[in-house]
Image (tube, rainbow, N blue to C red; front, top):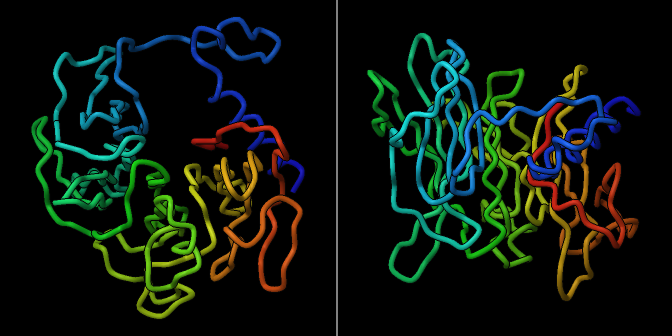
Length: 279
């Protein structure tokens, strides 16, 4: 568990340092190279099997870095909504060489509502074409839209969602807000999910935005702590156990309540604003 914890802390610390500053942190033993600049809020990144980098910009663009060079034009631009929402998560299918599937999570406006959805696209001959909407109606708002998506070692797709500024949604099993979700790559529900016929994998989250797996297969998530009525800071690192309730908004930090899970680490009254995690 210590190795898991230190690895998560290091990754969160490193990726919260702006590039210009990171170049000065020689004592970390990390060399930072700039491979693209003048971007607009780059948010999520993945790699195609041939090493091509594909990433999102929060303003609605999908961009490509090919052979070390940023392509001038986005391969896709969509209208997006939200303030801290927008074009968020991206994930390349583990079987991309067979199916050419790429998955996007983004925020959009519909009438007076802000919503998040997960869509599967196909990437062929340099173009992204919508294939299937996998999840829609995920609560959205100006803030707390979650948005990280990643395939696990089990080839299931994991999705983090925020409670969109409505804390009670995190405890509502009829809402996809404030959760970590788990689905098959075609949008169907895995038979071993903790709640029958539901994509919900864990509940009680405020705004989780980092997920990865350690070498033992433990799913670790980072989560933004509160900044208002419930206190401040208390960002979290959680080990995610299926069917577990991580407490928001009923507990934060070291507070306890029966049936609610505490984080393995929290930041107290300081904040990391942990938007991602990587082992």
